[in-house]
Amino acid sequence: MIFYTNWFVRDGFAGTAYGPVAFIRPQYRDDIGLRVHEQTHIRQFITLRYYFMKKLEREVEAFKAQIACYPDDRTEFLAGFMSANYGFGITTEQAITMLRRDNR
Image (cartoon, rainbow, N blue to C red; front, side, top):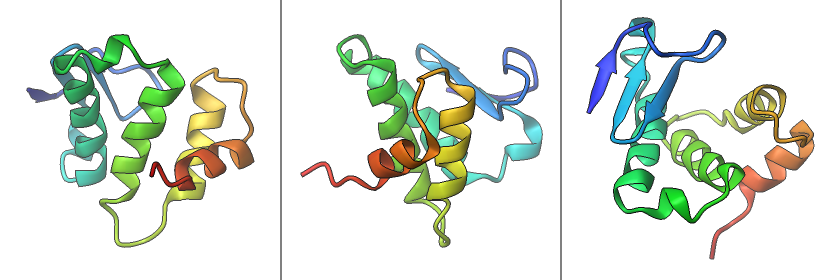
């Protein structure tokens, strides 16, 4: 379930998921990639994978799903956001490598 509101969303972020519920700022209502990102977290939670994955793994999966939604390549932009705002202690270059890595 997704709610479009500014409530519960951290400053500097466009959306967040808490268990089976996601909150997306209203100005990002039309951002399909962001919606898919948050739905990925909801799916991780519902399938219990959320509890068996490290936070970095969860975010990489969600950002990969988000990137796949856009006609242009937003990998570098989202990798920069991920490396700067999530506290993972990784560089933008490391995030780019993770987001471009094939899971097969």
